[in-house]
Length: 122
Image 1 (cartoon, rainbow, N blue to C red):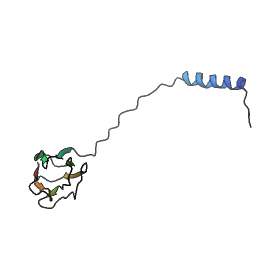
Image 2 (cartoon, rainbow, N blue to C red):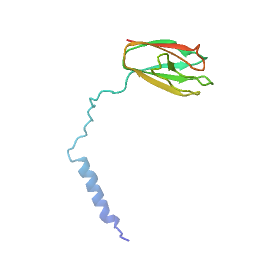
Image 3 (cartoon, rainbow, N blue to C red):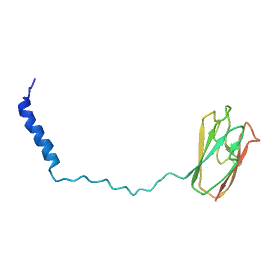
Image 4 (tube, one colour):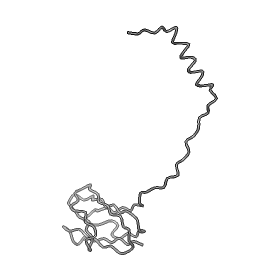
């Protein structure tokens, strides 16, 4: 086992601390990066009370829509044209779809076909 004398280590530590403080180096602030976000804009729809809330939304192309099931029963988010389908969503589940083309997208819930919604993409 190697033992170091406190008497020998103290001057070394003082030198390291003093040298670090007086080296003339200055702290530099990091420059902000100029990266662009690759995440699409997001819109949210809640499934609540056996309805899509809001029932109709208008978005721009490239927007991601996120549906969240707040009901205690299973629902789906299924486009009339079968472009997207969430499958069964239990309480708390989410489903998302990014709309890349302008148009009107109507959707419904398979177990509850009276539940309807529309996404208008400009």
